[in-house]
Image (cartoon, rainbow, N blue to C red; front, top):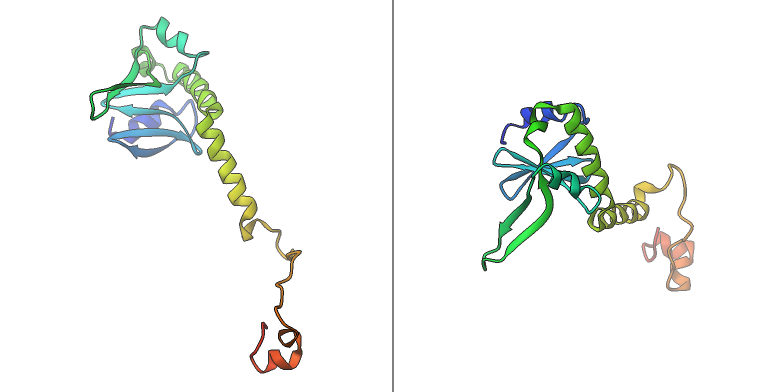
Length: 156
């Protein structure tokens, strides 16, 4: 599934997506939320207990990988039904559900909180022309005097 243009065409009914190379696969993102990935010509979408039954009813399986110690890890990403490769409109419906699931995940919530905190604490988040409420503290009376500042002994 190395052909990103194919994926863009396939997900055109869904809307704009972006890609991020991850462990040899292509992560499928809407904004900062990864809702699926493509690996070895197979598309997997994020599931939870509400959406998984639809995948099971279609005979789909979850993505499973083996760790170095041989332990198998079953992920919450499930293979899409083969028929969706020929039905972009229905694929878009499944992808929207996967995006909703991924948006509710603890990882996505943590990323959103981190982004909000970062944005609120950045100097660029202050309105243009807005002054900071706190002034720098001066450590001695000499630093406060205009003569000391003129001699280069205090903050300017």
